[in-house]
Image (cartoon, rainbow, N blue to C red; front, side, top):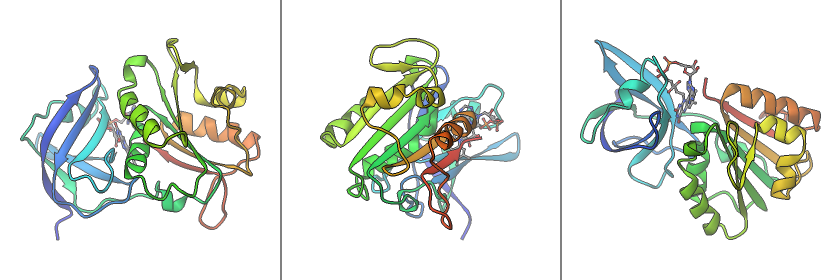
Length: 247
Ligand SMILES: Cc1cc2nc3c(=O)[nH]c(=O)nc-3n(C[C@H](O)[C@H](O)[C@H](O)COP(=O)(O)OP(=O)(O)OC[C@H]3O[C@@H](n4cnc5c(N)ncnc54)[C@H](O)[C@@H]3O)c2cc1C
């Protein structure tokens, strides 16, 4: 069977000049929440492909992706111009280990994202399974400007659904905004403000931290957490931190 399946753009939402979401209809193999597929277009006679995480839960039948347009990027400026009915290639099989079945049991599961790195968590939380084993879940979305909080309404809807089990916190690095923390996640962990604001401590005994998105955030947060006695989680050596870098 070919690696590629032809999908059709169902809808494109332009949130800001550089952030958009695509929904795609395609016949692909089932995936696990947190996994990614490759999206591909033929550009000037060359196939360009890049990995993208699903926003939708596996049981939803149109596939949603949340994407940043990269200036002079090879693929995203073309993805941004797609319209309903246009064709796109998607891999038949999805892949990736940034999934809940790779996360050990713990009291509090922290889901920390920068930018479009929120996608895998929205897929997991919309699926609503395999979460009973965590007493609390904290979803953190860090962005530059408040206009980049495109999925805040969905985060708030999920918070209501989970009835006190899910805490949500936004972090904005370049402007102040009510109810958002100002700054960057690694610093807010190092100075204790993140835990203080949410009212839940991070510790090696109680917490598992998932990190997704900007590699600088992932690396710096891992360093801050190591200072607190947490370690990377590996299948052969269980720890407290699971991460996915988008570049
Ligand atoms: C497992 C995985 C899942 C991913 N899922 C998503 C997703 O759901 N949404 C998404 O927008 N991207 C996602 N990415 C990144 C995506 O694959 C592309 O790298 C990105 O869309 C840029 O493609 P491009 O061809 O336009 O840019 P390129 O010409 O390939 O330029 C790459 C450069 O763009 C910058 N960059 C890449 N991704 C981002 C980003 N998300 N935010 C800010 N700067 C970035 C970096 O500087 C990188 O060096 C994912 C990457 C991985 C590895």
